[in-house]
Length: 262
Image 1 (cartoon, rainbow, N blue to C red):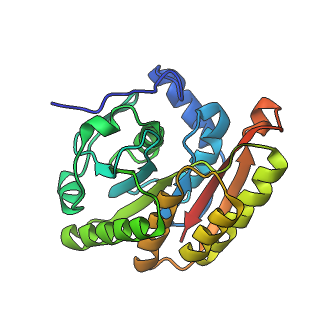
Image 2 (spheres, one colour):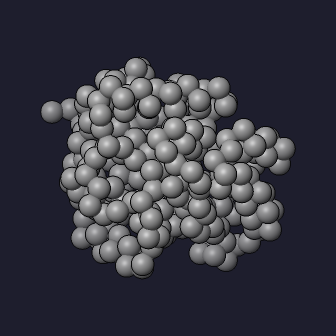
Image 3 (cartoon, rainbow, N blue to C red):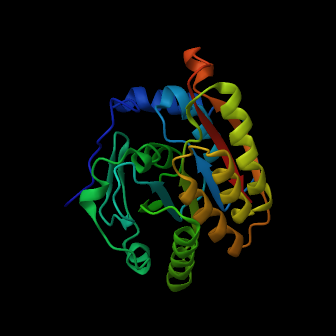
């Protein structure tokens, strides 16, 4: 069977299953967010930097969820929007794709463009660990303008209607890149604030106004728009932090946020 094999295991997260499981147990050991989110924003940096924040995002979804995760991540290599329909390998076992849902998305399938992209892969061990019965629909997003985000949201909603699936939508994104911690916090929190009202238009305006270097703003907007139609009424910032808390370098940081859309 063809499979999307691990490309960044041993770099972004441990390749050894026991080491990875131990780390994820640690990340999920806290109480987390006692909500039932329809969608989340989770970072995709190395686990030592952003793993705890990502786990907090996933705790906003009950651990017994066994439906389909629509995982939307940005293309860091300039590929166009594409889905993957093959199973995904993780050190903890294989994650099955929801083939019927992927087919219903009406998005071009391109396994080659997914092969080395970390924005989706980094999410998969969290899903496999916490939601062992869930399936995935991996979507790599190319163009991230507002129109493209709304089109993608409509395709997700059409697939939900066609298949009747119970879905949760994951937007994979880091926030500001390689700016001072002061600037990162100010700009990122400014951009995140409209998401509490599910206001994607204002989110785009603020991203542009402050030139916020969030790599997955399109996936975030698509997730919020889809969840809004699925009945979500608000967003909640669970935690914001930066790489500076780990590295001690506060002059050039990357921002990370866990956000639940409820």
